Amino acid sequence: MVAAQFWSAYVPCSSQHLDSVQLALEQIDLIRRLVNKHPQNMVLVTTAEGIERAHKEGRLASLIGVEGGHAVGTSLAVLRMLYELGARYLTLTHTCNTPWADCSTADEPGQVPQVGGLSNFGRSIVLEMNRLGMMVDLSHVSVPTMLDAMGVSKAPVIFSHSSAHALCNSSRNVPDHALQLLAESGGIVMVSFYPHFISCGEKSTLADVAAHINHVRKVAGIDHVGIGAGYDGINLTPTGLEDVSKYPELFAELLANGWSEGDIQKLAGLNLIRVFKAVEQNFAYSISLKRITNELQINVYALYLKPKKR
Image (cartoon, rainbow, N blue to C red; front, side):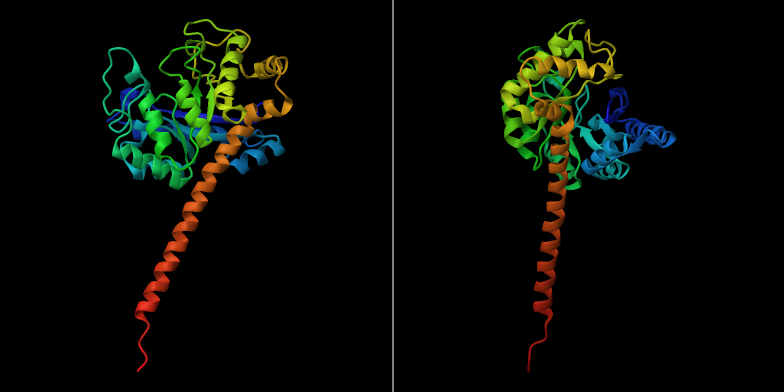
């Protein structure tokens, strides 16, 4: 009963400064070939409206996300080309710093930040993603990078697969002050199911995941929480949430603890669609503003070039 899926074009940190761009292209090629091979059941989607249309058609809306900012090779041109190929979010870092952003391991004891958040080029990456209409994903980044990105971004941001730091103090999770800032900017935390981010150990349960979802809801609000399980990207799963067929069990647990059906709909996808639409609207606004500016320039030039009456 899954209606939409982000396929992650994951690029390992070992490829940074080597062949990370090529690997990202190969991952996107693989995702597109997979989707094209199963047109009866899957469809490549690049817009929020496309998710809704695919749902009505009964096909799996397949979206592309690029995981690891090193995949752009410190190039805005590469970022733009990844967008043209269908990527609709970029995770700013993976488990390694880029030359322009610190990852979550920089927050661990004994580690020294390389950048201290986002560099000026990192801010340019975020603003270019805003301009393109590409979601800024802050899973895997350090807390200073989170705060910098939310401060710079003109559109809501996402955490594609992170959980609550207050319940598990992994550097991969989101602290409460960042959750509060996220709510103010309209973003979303999609809760990961990885036991190391849920219970800070190798074992966790469905109830533990529900506790993280409830905590994000308590701090940020019902409009700012989603599902970011990370299936297949994780080698351990919580008891009771072994695969996607268990999603209804999680929703039943929440319903039994005071959630409404409307709340569940937001968690299950409507919150992400709202953020996606807001990112697209920011893009549309940028295009509109550019058009108005160009028209003003044309009018000024026309006025300047108009010959004087003699």
